[in-house]
Length: 245
Image (cartoon, rainbow, N blue to C red):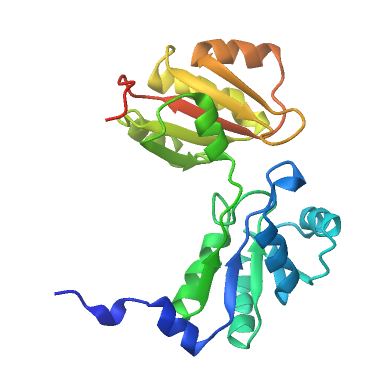
């Protein structure tokens, strides 16, 4: 029998504390990709918690948003999670933003969300930009089943993760930085095979947006000749079935 006492109900929480933690996606490239609702929320909350105040400052200045900004990132996440949630319990509305995309996707924001839920705070996540979705659709690979891995471990656990991915038959999505791109492509070739089909998208929604498709060996050769620049999303095709089941 289910223990309903452990289930949290948004309606009950709202009666206890009407203030909220807002998770607000920001553009991954073109500033015009922000939603009207996101702008409204950022203007109306009491504070904005930002991954990098300088980066967020460019966005806020562009849309004439005057809301005070506090710092929240992976180096102060535990301390700031407590500060943010305490401010909300005191009656303040706070929005969290990352440098680009949806907070909580491959960054530290999920931790403050977890603390907020534990303290009975309403969490409202706005829909919006995230890099892996346009990269996945752009790849032309099956989208009905996919596995989002984000950034692979830099050292410890990396080999184990690749061994797990060898067994994966869904489309796989990775994030990668320019200086580690070649290493990751070489690992795809080693663990998944030289004929593995991949799609590599970079600088999504920015001026020099580009998507390259081919076998992993072909794209290794390409980036050996042309130095990788920008932020990358790698989409890996693993299924032999082309139809959607």
